[in-house]
Length: 273
Picture 1 (cartoon, rainbow, N blue to C red):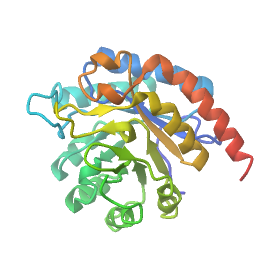
Picture 2: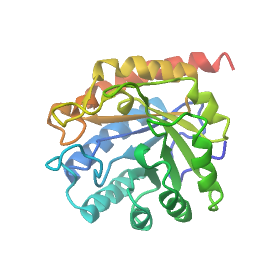
Picture 3: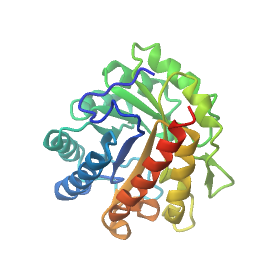
């Protein structure tokens, strides 16, 4: 697979890579705390790590939901995290106009699931020269993601990641169809499993998305066993106080024990190749 990101440590090892961080950038102190903790953990375990943080949350259920601390302020924090810890960073973009702006600060541009068919956004992201992480729409089959991949490739870039994040099941639930992992890997791109978003319970009557964080380990272990190339986890020191998606985030102090289990499963899976 054509997968290279500058500053990605431990990439030569036979391990999954990790995208992890808070749902949204809430403050510089919080971002640096989370990043520093995960850098220490992933260095100990030899896991390639990309810090994740959204500089703005454009897709919110209610008008009064937290959306961010300001675009440039949050992007500069992401840039500082990358420089301080010498690690790559990833953030979402929400329109074609945002691609070039965000590309000045981060290493990977993420296309949200609801926008994965938007041609202008995919083309603009490709033209920045950054790696493009496309989240599979909850409403799409794995096979249909070939068209999103083609849009990026035909725009001059082969630096593509696809992320599975669950498929709509009824009105208020998501399920993970693990058959989609090898289907998308056959497109010659690395495939990531977004564990925490796969456990969301959207469209709640309260207007606040719910979740099932108690199933994080179950989804993660199954994903590694299936053979995903990377995993995506949103994590926070105090998820109950997080300003966005706290209902399905992993508490930060639970990350290392989970990664140890996943690394052990990956080692066993590797023996069957």
